[in-house]
Length: 151
Ligand SMILES: [Zn+2]
Image (tube, rainbow, N blue to C red; front, side, top):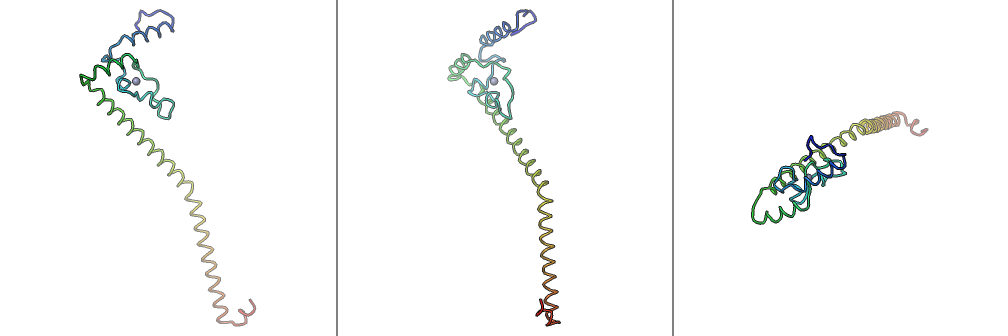
């Protein structure tokens, strides 16, 4: 890895870092175990709303092959950790999506309620007025046969 003694230009440091990562064993802390298992969440969510940024650990094909070979005869427990990580991320994503849906629904309700309420209120007022008018005409017709004939 990079140390304080690294005084080379930046791209050389990156080259060294890549070389240093390639030198790691798949069991080393700096190696991405999710990648070894087949899928790193940092790659899974790249360029999405849930983008986690670049994975800080090494993704190296040689380490992956070495792990695949070694895991045939020994259980390193990487898959269990990997599944737990993926399940946690899925739960977090689902929670976020549910929150977003609730937000949109509440926003729509806040926007729609007064309009719908006004329309319903107006319709009821019109219906009541029409009903009152009909009642008045019925009464008028009942007590004044001339009024119904003239209208
Ligand atoms: Zn990774």
